[in-house]
Length: 251
Image 1 (cartoon, rainbow, N blue to C red):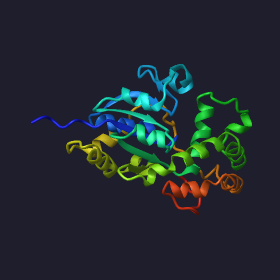
Image 2: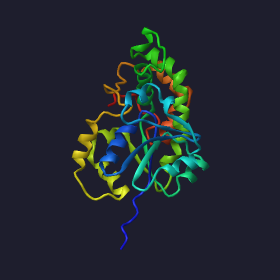
Image 3: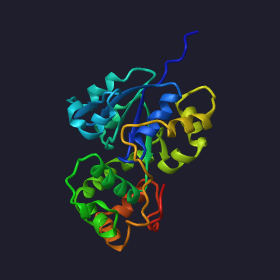
Image 4: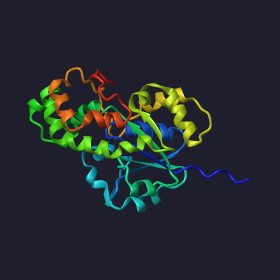
């Protein structure tokens, strides 16, 4: 009898939700990481030997290529990632793929994204804008953060698509049972999921933050008003989070 064909896999992830932690886990479950980051009209082919360059200047690795063509680069037993919107084109292009959708509470995403842009030199923030504070975060949300919220909204319908495995950032970082769910979804043989999680958490990844994102000293009434003005709570609910959840310290 022929061995079953291994799945082709796409990790659809909300930005700053743990894209490359999820990648580490899927790789340790026996699937080949292509280092391809897919978008509707282009792809980014990162160099796995120079992750620092990818962090600082992803445009270096960008190639114009529509999603219906770029998915052909992912062979059975391989996976790519992308912050892909839920559209007729993306869903039809991913027909036949196993899709894992990774989410995170948008409040934490926004502070993590603000810090990441400063850390990687993607913004020329003044010194007084670098430190976490309610005012700085509110300013960020009303500016560059608005794009992050809009992107999350464009992705939110993946959470309710039949056949898609939706997982949460917090569980991904802390619960080996999530690794078990991923393994089962991808058709992998049983293994030591605790070890997979532990090793993945210790690996250097493309966009990993050096310290956990903590909203205690950043999120306040100014940030919440800016978030509400852009429809953040309703988008959070579509992603599977409580519409009116109070801001909390987050890992």
